[in-house]
Length: 194
Ligand code: SF4
Ligand code: SF4
Image 1 (tube, helix red, strand yellow):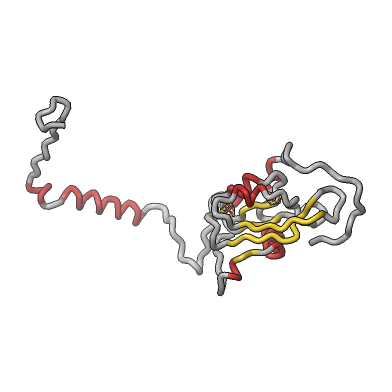
Image 2: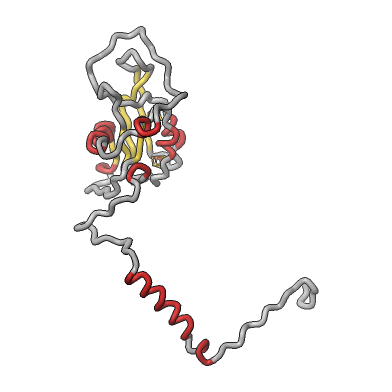
């Protein structure tokens, strides 16, 4: 394209007056913004003395938990959908034959690397039985990388600690209508709850 092309629209730099050259309008704008935030509603808290309370804990995407069913057993049926959906590849599941008659499989081992997780919530969305959920707990810390790999027991303990304040999604919006594995009746039930 040539400089004399008819399609080109040349924009003239505006002529600045004395106040413009002294940056006075910009200074005024900046100070107005500062004062508005100084006297407006505070969004920050003095952590760790004060805790931030998420506006809606039920949709917050913090630390994961593995939910339990009505009998206290891990709800997960080891379908691997969450691990498949996870973009950070931080969920590792070892499935095994279920000791209970109402499902085919259960997770013998279930780990989430919380340091690799990007807290996108895809695992929660993918789960057909509401077994994995993200809670409103956000202050994760550990003394080693290994400590931040949450195993099944730790994930279940997060459920135990948060279930009263944050009910399961299925308790809030009703049980999932499809995707849950079909009941199985050929095996004897076990009392054990992993
Ligand atoms: S929140 Fe996202 S990144 Fe984290 S485990 Fe779930 S799917 Fe993976
Ligand atoms: S999607 Fe749900 S049921 Fe399937 S493996 Fe993950 S947590 Fe378990």
